[in-house]
Amino acid sequence: MKILVINAGSSSLKYQLIDMNGEVMLAKGNCERIGIEGGHISHKKALSDGKTVAYEKDVYFADHTQAFQELVWALTRSEAKVIDDLSEIGAVGHRIVQGAEKFDRSVLIDEQVLNTIDELSALAPLHNPAHVQGIRACQAVLDKSVPQVAVFDTAFHQTMPEKAYIFGVPYECYTEHNVRRYGAHGTSHRYVSQRVAELMGKKPEEIKVVTCHLGNGSSITAVDGGKCVDTSMGLTPLGGILMGTRSGDLDPSVVTYLMQKLNLSAAEMDSYLNKKSGYLGLSGLSSDHRDLFAAANEGNKRAALALEIQGYQIQKFIGSYAAAMNGLDAIVFTGGIGENAWDTRHDVCKNMEFLGIEIDEELNKTTPSCEVCLSKPGSRVQVWIVPTNEELAIARDTLALV
Image (tube, rainbow, N blue to C red; front, side):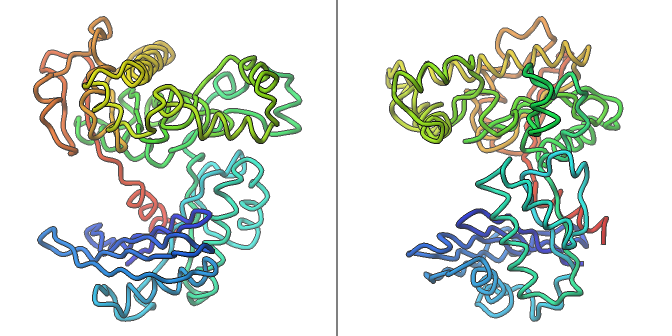
C-alpha cells in the first residue's frame, strides 16, 4: 500500500508518499506560502541510487485545497511523477499537533474526530486550524473511500502520570480550562525510543531512555519501558529548554514583570517569548545554531553563552529524568541539532561520568547524521544518534489502522 503523509501548516503543506512494501519513500515536497503571494511547490522524486528528480513551480495557492491539487499534479503528471493515478494512494496519514486528552492514540478520521481537532484549536492556534484545512483539502480532492488517519504529537505523552502533568495552580484550571502539560514532538520521541531499543537488541519495555529532540524547537522526554513518563514542553511548545526563538521555562513572575516594564499586552508578551527570545534574544545575532557556533568560535561571548545555557539545561533534564525513572540505559539525540551538532552533544555529555555517560569524542566530532552509538565500550549509559522519521511513524500508524 502507498500512503500519503500530510503535515499541514497555516501557510504550508508538506508531504511524503511512502510505499509500505519495504517502507520506501517515493517522493516528498512542500507547498509554501498558501494564501500569500509568492507561492511555490518544491517536489522531489526519490531514485533507487539515492539521487532525486526535482520538480519546482511558482504558483499562487488560494487555499489548502489548491495546494493539494498541485501536489497531486506533482505526484501523477509532472516530470518527477511517481504514480499514474490517485487510486494508487491507499490511505492518508495526517500529523496533528494537539489532541489533548481526547486522543491517546492515532485514529481514523470521521466528522466527529475532525470537529474535535478543530475544538482543540485554542490549545494550538497556529497548528490545529491548519491541520483541519489540510484534512478538508484531502477530502475535497480524494475519493471518499480513501481512509484518512490522524496521528497526534501529544498522544505519546498521554502515559505521563498525573504528578508529571499537573501544574501547581488551582486544580480548577485543569478541570475547567484544560491547563496541564501536554508536551510535543511525541511522534518523534516514540519513533527514536523504539528504534534505539532495536539497535541495542532490547525490547522497549526493557530499557529507560532519555530522548533529546533538538532543533529550532526542542524537547526532552523520559521514556520508561516504552512509555513517556515526563517531558519538557508544557501546555504549549514554549516550555522546557532554551530554543531558537523561544525562552523555555521561566519564573512566572518574569512574565508579569516584563509586561509591566515594557508595557506589553498578553498577545505581545506571547510573541516576545515565542519569537524574540531563546538563541536570538540572548545572542542578539541569530536563531540558528550554526550561526551561533561560528560566532562563538570567533569570540562572540553572547553566542557562546546561549549555547552553554542550552547544553546545561539539557544536562539538568537528563539528570532529573534519570532520578524520576530510577535509572538510565540510553540517551538519544535526534532532530536537526541533535543529529548534526557535535558541539551540543559534547556539552550535554561532558562531566556526566557520575551517571555512567562516557562518549567517544573523536567519533562524536566526525560522525555525520546516521544511526550510531557514540559511547565508549565501558559506558554504563549508551549514547546514540538516531535520525528521526516522523513521516514513517505516521505511515506505520496509518497502515495499522486501515
